[in-house]
Length: 322
Ligand code: HEC
Ligand code: HEC
Ligand code: HEC
Ligand code: HEC
Ligand code: HEC
Ligand code: HEC
Ligand code: HEC
Image: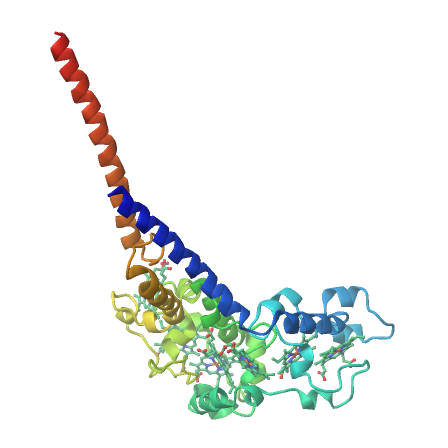
C-alpha cells in the first residue's frame, strides 16, 4: 500500500510538472520576445510626446500642448491591451516618424478590415441590423465603440466584473451622458433616461455592475457575441433567463470564462485525471473539497486508530497490572 501511494505521488508530481511546462511552451510560440522588445523600444519614440511624461517635459519646443493633451496614450493600459505588443507604426503607418507629422498621415491609419477581414465582415453585417444602423450608420464606425489602445475583450480577461465594467462603459458613455448622446443622436432626439427605461428591473444600477447591456440587448447564439443591438421589443426582460440554474449568462458573460475552465479541464482530464486525481487540477471546488475532506478524514482515521491502539494497549497493561 505505501509503495503504491508513493508511485502515484511521483507520477502526480511528474504530470504536474508537464502541466506547468506545456503552457510555458505555448506562450513562447507567440510573437518572439525580440519582436516585442523591438516594438516596445520603437514606441518610446511616440511616448516621448504622447504621454503624461511627454506633456510635462516636451522633447522639443513649440508643440501644441493643448492639442497634445487630448492625444495621450496610457502606456501600462496599452501594453496590457489586445494590441499592446504592436509598434504604434503598425497601425499609424506613414507620416508619424517625424514631427511635425505629415498633413494627411491620419488617412493611412490601418482599419480593422485590413487585419481582421473575415471577422470584420461578419460583424459589419450584424451591425447593419443593429438599432444604431438605422439613423447613425454614417456616424458609427468600429472605433466609435472600440479604443484600440485599451481594448481587451472578454475572452482575454479572467474576471467577470472587469468585463462588465469595460463593456458597459462603452454603452453608458453615450446612454448616460446628455452631452455625448446629443453629439450622435439624430436631430431633436432626447436621451431617454437609462434608469427610467429600466425601472422594471430592481436595482438597475446594481445590475449594470454585474451584467452587461449586451446580455439583454443582443440575440443569443453564435460563437461570438453578436453586434446586433436589439430594440425594446426584442430585448430580454425575463428574470429567469438569468436567475435560474440554466442561466443564459453561461453562454454570454461567462462563455469564455467557462471555456477557459473547459480547456484547462480538457487538458487536465486527458493528461492527469485519466490516471490520478490531483487536488486543484480540476478547478472543481466541490470535487476538491470532497477530496480534501477525504484526505483529512483518512488522516484523522489513522490518528484515531493509532490513539485507540495506544489507549487499548495502556488499558490492557493496567488491567494486567491490577
Ligand atoms: C515631438 C513630439 C511628438 C512625437 C515624437 C510624436 N508625436 Fe504624434 N503628435 C504630436 C502632437 C503635438 C500632435 C497634435 C497634432 C499636431 O500638432 O500635429 C500629434 C498628433 C498625433 C496623432 C493625431 C493626428 C491626427 O491627425 O489626429 C497621431 C495618430 C500621432 N500623433 C501618432 C504618433 C505616433 C504613432 C508617433 C510615433 C511614431 C508620434 N505621434 C510621435 C507630437 C508628437
Ligand atoms: C492596432 C492598431 C493601433 C495601434 C497599435 C496604435 N493605434 Fe493609435 N489609433 C488607431 C486608430 C484606428 C485610431 C483612430 C481612432 C479614431 O478613428 O478615432 C488611433 C488614434 C490615435 C491617436 C489620435 C487620438 C485618438 O485617441 O483618437 C493617437 C494620438 C494615437 N492613436 C497614438 C498611438 C500611439 C502613441 C500608439 C502606440 C503606443 C498607437 N496609437 C498604437 C490604431 C492603433
Ligand atoms: C495591424 C493589424 C491590426 C489592426 C489594424 C487591427 N487589429 Fe485587432 N488584432 C490584431 C492581431 C494580430 C490580434 C491578435 C490576434 C490573436 O491573438 O489571435 C488582434 C486582436 C484583436 C482583438 C482581440 C480578440 C481576438 O480576436 O483576439 C480584438 C477585439 C480586435 N483585435 C479588434 C480590432 C478592431 C475593432 C480593430 C479596428 C478598430 C482592429 N482590431 C484593428 C491585428 C490588428
Ligand atoms: C455599439 C458599439 C460597438 C460597435 C459599433 C462595434 N463593437 Fe465590437 N464589440 C462591442 C462590445 C460591447 C463587444 C464585447 C466586448 C467583449 O467581448 O468584452 C465587442 C466585441 C468585439 C470583438 C470581440 C468579439 C469576440 O467575442 O471575440 C471584436 C473582434 C469586435 N468587437 C470588432 C468590431 C468591429 C470590427 C467593429 C466594426 C465593424 C465593431 N466591433 C463595432 C461593441 C461594439
Ligand atoms: C456613440 C454613442 C453611443 C454608443 C457608444 C451606444 N449608443 Fe445606443 N444609441 C445612441 C443613440 C444616439 C441612439 C438613438 C438612435 C436613434 O434614435 O436612431 C441609440 C439607440 C440605442 C437603442 C434604441 C433606443 C432608441 O431610442 O431607439 C438601444 C437599445 C441602444 N442604443 C443600446 C446601446 C447599447 C447596448 C450600447 C452598447 C453596446 C450602445 N447603445 C452604445 C448612441 C450610442
Ligand atoms: C436585464 C436586461 C437588460 C439590461 C441589462 C439592459 N437592458 Fe436596456 N432594455 C431592456 C428591455 C427589456 C427594454 C425595453 C423596456 C421597455 O419596453 O420599457 C430596454 C430598453 C432600453 C432602451 C430603450 C430602447 C428603445 O427602443 O426605446 C435603451 C436605450 C436601453 N435599453 C439601453 C440599455 C443600456 C445602455 C444598458 C446597459 C447600461 C441596458 N439597456 C441594459 C433590457 C435590458
Ligand atoms: C441578464 C441577466 C439578468 C436578468 C435578465 C435579470 N437579472 Fe437580476 N441580477 C443579475 C445578476 C448577475 C445579479 C447580481 C448577482 C450578484 O452579484 O450577486 C442580479 C441581481 C439581482 C438582484 C439583487 C440586487 C441587489 O441589490 O443586490 C435582484 C433583486 C434581481 N437581480 C432581480 C431581478 C428581477 C426581478 C429581474 C427581472 C425583472 C432580473 N433580476 C433580471 C442578472 C440578471
